[in-house]
Length: 253
Ligand SMILES: CCCCCCCCC/C=C/C(=O)SCCNC(=O)CCNC(=O)[C@H](O)C(C)(C)COP(=O)(O)OP(=O)(O)OC[C@H]1O[C@@H](n2cnc3c(N)ncnc32)[C@H](O)[C@@H]1OP(=O)(O)O
Ligand SMILES: NC(=O)C1=CN([C@@H]2O[C@H](COP(=O)(O)OP(=O)(O)OC[C@H]3O[C@@H](n4cnc5c(N)ncnc54)[C@H](OP(=O)(O)O)[C@@H]3O)[C@@H](O)[C@H]2O)C=CC1
Image (tube, rainbow, N blue to C red; front, side, top):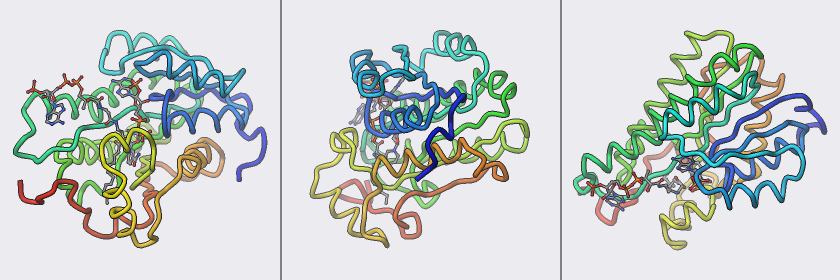
């Protein structure tokens, strides 16, 4: 939907670029003219994205939870127009079965390591009037049984997005919150029947495609978003408007 070449001359960093949403975002940004640097833990998945993207995409295998390596890499990129914090995930479990280490691992990936990425990119983004798009999860503040750790972390990201939008006016920050996107990743967490039930309960009765998420991310990197910062945008078919379905068999666990 965006015009050809609208991101020409822009540089973007996309985490989790080797699969699902991150791959779709990377390919679309390149298609629109951006130079994209993709990171993720698995080099072979990033190489697949590179072979689909062609010129305009380069990658580095990196664990964003490894602060020293990630921080040095991000800071070393210099000027940056767009940081897409897409790397994330969790396991589904009753809150009573989440150990302190399990909670900490999910909180680290989805909140504190993501915050460190923003911190490391701050100077490079400020140089260019850059933008940060944080991928989150629809309406964590309503509570999502089965995702206590992840909902807490994602609510934290929403608060961080708003706080930094106030504190760093030279950088625009957004939170993009999908509901259900039928990627391989989500397929590993939930069986197809359960996903179909969750999708059927959303007001629009549909999932969100990776291409739709990618178009929104790209748009937030253009002048369309010049007058916006600190916004939380739900790409969820309206599912955030209704109480989240329980992902556990029993809601009370
Ligand atoms: C309407 C809206 C509806 C919502 C509708 C849509 C719902 C889904 C939407 C979301 C979709 C997606 O996110 S799609 C993305 C899907 N992909 C992913 O999530 C994969 C990402 N996962 C990871 O990167 C990792 O597994 C991560 C969770 C961060 C943990 O990383 P680590 O390497 O540190 O993990 P480990 O060392 O193995 O384990 C750390 C601790 O976690 C515990 N742990 C690990 N798996 C566990 C499990 N299944 N159950 C309990 N505990 C577990 C271990 O036992 C350890 O604790 P101790 O035993 O105490 O030592
Ligand atoms: N699909 C859905 O319905 C929804 C997804 N989301 C969120 O959108 C994002 C993308 O999800 P999706 O594409 O579906 O799932 P994927 O599992 O395909 O994507 C997660 C990506 O993050 C990367 N990643 C995970 N941990 C790390 C790490 N420590 N360091 C660097 N990279 C890491 C993974 O690559 P690697 O394993 O190689 O490191 C992978 O490419 C996630 O944050 C997810 O939670 C939110 C709402 C709904």
